[in-house]
Image 1: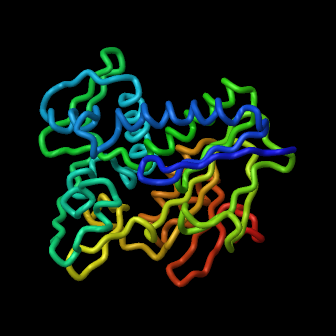
Image 2: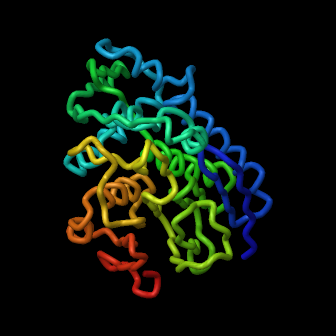
Length: 307
């Protein structure tokens, strides 16, 4: 089977799409671009015209929001519920005070010697109120939402399903470390090479795994890092401390029934640290955990040859 693919920058990362029917590539890419534009308009923290920015500015009031933002917030609150608050969308304020307050390229290039990070406690996801009938959200004073990784994973799931439905082709969508597939896969499944950095070359070193359905997500502390004075920070906040997670894991990769579920689990595993292997196995999730030393291990039935 001949595959066709395309890649382009998006959401501060790299968007890739691969199809099993080469003639479907242009239409599938168009679907992906439309989904990404919709997610960005709804969920960006860095666009003045984004719905999330307006919602965060309207704390203390009840705001009617569009379908995409409502779904993204619903997904983020479900992530918090499934992880007992370990993956919490109310980390927005402490993430902003820590320095992740603009597009990451600008954060990375800022003179870290002149910036001093601050941190704040995380208010907790239970304070956010949704009304599914009225499509309204109430964010209380002191709470800022960051939908971050779950919105990107949602975009991958949405785009893969929509592109497969529109073209009849098997489709793989990758947004940074978030991968979703839909439609009939190629023979042997979709081969995915694992790496710390989403921008790594396709022919670079690293193990590969194959998936036939659902999604695969990698969360890590290697790529999105910046300096704030002497210390170097990363973007995965531990809600229990309000600071970047102190974790032994460089990256965690999880396979699940959807990209969203894989992303929730991989993010939680990074934050949980030494507790992660048991937490993943108890939930029947297959995962690859790479220690800061570079040693990789599997959990929950992850194939040994891909560790």
